[in-house]
Structure formats: structure tokens, C-alpha cells
Amino acid sequence: MHPHLHDFFIYIASEKGLAHNTLEAYQRDTTAFVNFWEVQGITQFAQIETDHIIAFLSHLHGHQYASASICRALMALKVLFRFLKREGIVPSNVTLYLDSPKLWQLIPEVLNYAEVDRLLSQPDETTYIGARDKAILEVLYASGLRVSELCSLGINDIDDTFVRVMGKGRKERLVPIGVKALAAVDHYLNFREDSEHQKALFITEKGRRIDRVAIWKIVKHYAEEANIIKNISPHTLRHSFATHLLDNGADLRIIQEMLGHSSISSTDRYTHVSSKRLQEAFHAFHPSNIRF
Image 1 (cartoon, one colour):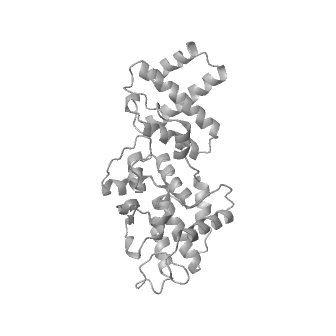
Image 2 (tube, helix red, strand yellow):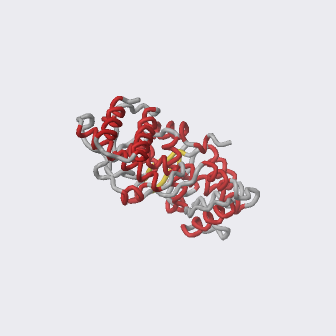
Image 3 (cartoon, rainbow, N blue to C red):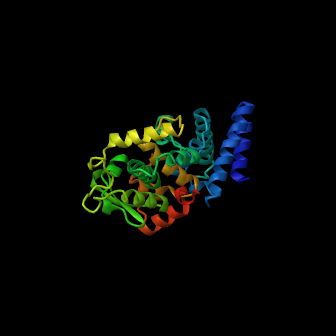
């Protein structure tokens, strides 16, 4: 056990006057938090930032923890970091401004791995529409694009390693793409007799660029076919992309770069990551490359 965590347990048992069940829950939650980050090489509380708190809570949410359990875990971490700050173990309390309203904005609905696999297996790839829809779903999940970014993709925006995305504020970024998504796009393009003349990557049966409403209907349709009862949208695949990367050990700042966010934490920090490291992290951690 981490020595500071042992001291914290003594503190809450002797000074906080917590009920026995609450005491045990706080011990479980804080131990789980420490173990979660120790596996990823973060062994000192002074290394923890607000990003890490959010990542841990998102991990719980992605594993179907109840809202009450996640709120309790947040409260346990708040008590822990107040204690660590008082003892001079950390320079600041990273949970100080992390309140529940902000938390729920940062932890949206996500799909688990089985639900993703069911969703992506629904389209009939022997038809033009099925092949197109399969490619759309694969790209949404494999690269975490916003639906507007997906709609604006051109045929030349995807190569063997990256998707070139024009994000908010006309800011361009490169996002790695996995082999399964590439294979789905290539298969879809085999149905496109006019592909060399059509600039848009995803088009309707009439040859027009597909729009956000159509993508929303596609996701809803296949979610229903896959018996997914969660209220999902194209954005759910983006959140699932980020959550699954976190679950598999990817650095939060790498995910921020992939998503095109200035930050996904309350600290509003942004760290640029090189394209090489983006690609390495993507292929190492994203489950789209290890699904069978």
C-alpha cells in the first residue's frame, strides 16, 4: 500500500467520523485510483493533475459504474487531496474546482467494447449502402471525428496512416486511422464508380455529400439493430474512442490532440504532440486494431 494512502486511512478513521460503510467505500475508491495510475507509471501524488482525476472517473463511467458510485469516488478523492494538501504532500488540491456539474459535462455516455463490436457488425457490406455505412461507423470510432468533420472529408483526406481533418476554427490536424477502418473505406470505394471524379468521401445514393442528419440516422438505425438500449448518437462513438484509449493506457494529452480539443479537463491546458507519437500511441492502444 502507498504510505500516504495508509496515513489517509488512519486520518479518515480517527478524525472524520465517517460511517463504517462510507469509510470502506472511501478506502476502496482511493485504492482503486492509486492502482489505476501506478500501472501507468504514476506513483507519486505530486504527479497527479486534474486530468488524471477526470480520466479515472471516465474509466469508471466506461465500465458501467452507477452515477452514485462515481459521485462517491469523486468525493473520496476530494477528501484525499484535501488531506494531502494539508500535509504538504501535494502543492495544490487538484480537485478543488472539480464539481459535479462540470464532471457530467466531461463524462458522457459511452459504449463498451462488446457494444461497439455489435454496432460495427450490423451493416451489410455486400451492398453499396451497407459498405458505406460500415466505413462511416468504423471511421467515427477509429478516429474519434466530430460528425461535421466526417461529413466534410474528401477522398484524398485519407491515406495509409492518417486522416486529414479540418476541425473547429478551420484548424487542420492529422488523426491516425486503423487498418480495419481503412479496409472498410477501401471496400466502400470499390462500389464508387465515380470515385475519381467525386471529391466528397461519403455520399448519398444520389451522389451528394452526406450530411449530419443522415449520419445521425445511420447510427441510430444500427444501434437499434444491435439491440443497444443506450441513447447514442454519432458523438457517442467519439466519446467511446477517447474512453477506450484511456482504458488501454494512452496519455490524456495524446487523446486531446486526436480529438482536436484545447483540453478535455477543467484546466484548459493543451500540449502539442508530434505526429509520430500520435501514430505510435494510436496503434499501440486503440482496440480497433486488436479486434478479432
